[in-house]
Length: 492
Ligand SMILES: *Cc1c(COP(=O)(O)O)cnc(C)c1O
Image (cartoon, rainbow, N blue to C red; front, side):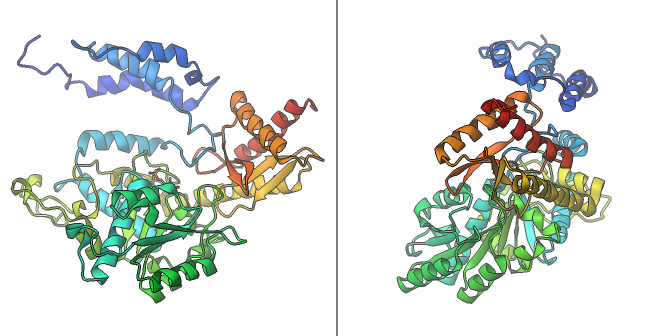
């Protein structure tokens, strides 16, 4: 080895990609029995000690292809409808690679930096926000909610003449954030990170619609106002991950405005639902939101690690997350102009360092730009409507089939239902049977889905966001539940 040269190869990117390509192509065909099941094989092959000399390019690419890719996670399989996750489509994956190679930072006056910013403006427009709203891409919904809560804290502090981002939370009196019991747990964690404390979350029970009880919310707000507590935010849930219900946003917006409290909406999963005219109304006027979290890596199928937060007041967000630049990087931050003479390194490009918690990051918007450019807002809208239809199809079967029971009427693309043999009333037996059905259908491999509890009952819970799935996959899931249920009861 010549110590003057780095041991990592840098001269044949094409060769490296070509050598793993057949394995990637095989993986996305999702054929046969899922090889990732054979854990003992790949685990023992991969579990090596720290390489000192390194095994070299070809050997590691072979391991990547044969062990990592070949045993990958089939969340893009058309029959997969579990949790709230999927994998990128072709263009999203290609853009991710292109970005990793050619846009290795969101900074400076590059085409990648430009489309990152453009993608955010397109999202703002597509979701119906006024053009003066601003946003940033984040690592996911967790960070998007953290940033929204950080802006809310700043807003609450500034109303009291304080500057929490600079001075901390001193002066915020027993801060409170209001949300329903269905709100995702990352919101509480965000409050922990911000030093407001997880216990500052005041979780309001649901009403008969399965969304936040507005009377209880008003009572809690009155009580805390009378006690002089600092009211930081009302958090609306735009698509809870158990049932897909959307809190009544027009009412939450009115309450928040009347009381001067920040309205944050967690639409990480369901925010894309604004594109389906049939449920659009539930979201109210998005222009009334102060901050909004949404995950392109969910329904948009951007590469995982792509969240977004959109806010009304970029000034507050900027004060909440302001970066105190070091002397080494105090250069011009501006929209990328049309000056063809200077080095791209003379301008930082727009970037949004004051809007988040990352400094160096991938230009996550490159993949979002590519996805929107490929299929347009119409293509996204069709996907949302198709998937909401999938949930309605499952609900229709569950309502009409003697051996099925619908547990929650779908609003978006989640449907909660269960298998219920005629005459069965024992809840714990029904829970156990449905849990066994869930595992049974995974074992068969045609469909994979997940579960939740609705009113204490174990529910089979598909969530359709997978670009590769359609009504045939929803029908297959119903078929599988019936087949496995009957099989387990010995009634086939
Ligand atoms: C997924 C999700 C989150 C968490 O987002 P990540 O992207 O997983 O970090 C938060 N809230 C809701 C409603 C979600 O669907």
